[in-house]
Structure formats: structure tokens, C-alpha cells
Image (tube, rainbow, N blue to C red):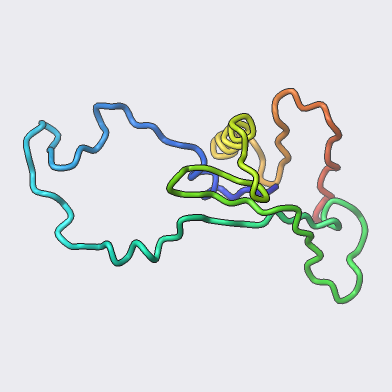
Length: 141
């Protein structure tokens, strides 16, 4: 599954130190200040989706020397659908909730990728995985 950097940034949660966390109505010295929300933006809430969904697609010709049949520009096969519920901060794959272990694997892979420790397009296997490995990508001419 390819996950772009923006999706990884959403997946890897930043937890600020308690002394730098924003507190509404209070300045950095603890003194009261007026609210920053001077307008009512509640009408825009309907524009923000509750869930972000994307398909996991496999191109069977990408990792092989086979040539796609004539007339097929994008022979990708949808392997599944991943959904992220923004308000619950929860993932599902094909409607099934992602377990905490699976989510930890995704978060770990994303952290490594964002730090440059994993090459773009590389396959990251969960710790302890001993199943079959995917073939390497074919070289790009």
C-alpha cells in the first residue's frame, strides 16, 4: 500500500508538551484575553468531511516484466478501501476497524518514511512478519 507523506503526517500524532498547549481565552502568562473567534463559522462545518476514504490499488504489471494488454492504460486492481474517521481518529479497512497493532505498524512506517528512513515506494513489513515477501519493483528505464 502506498501512503503519501500528507496522509502519514495525519497518521503520526504530534503531542505537544503541556506547557505549550493552547488554552483558549488565556495568554502565555495566564492573563485573560478576548476570544480569537469573532465570527460564527459554523456554516462551514458542513463543508468538512467526517471521513476521508481512499482505495488501495495494485498494478500487477508494475513489479513484473509483463506488458499491459493494448488499450489498458491503468490496469490497477482495487484491493481494498481505507477510511479515516476524523472525529473519532479511527481507521477502517473494508469496513473493519483497524486493530491497535495494525495502526501502530502504520504509524511506525509513516514515522520512518517522514524521517527519510524508508525510500518512497518501499515495502514496510510489520515487526515479526514472517510471511511471503512482495517482489522488488522492476527498474525504471
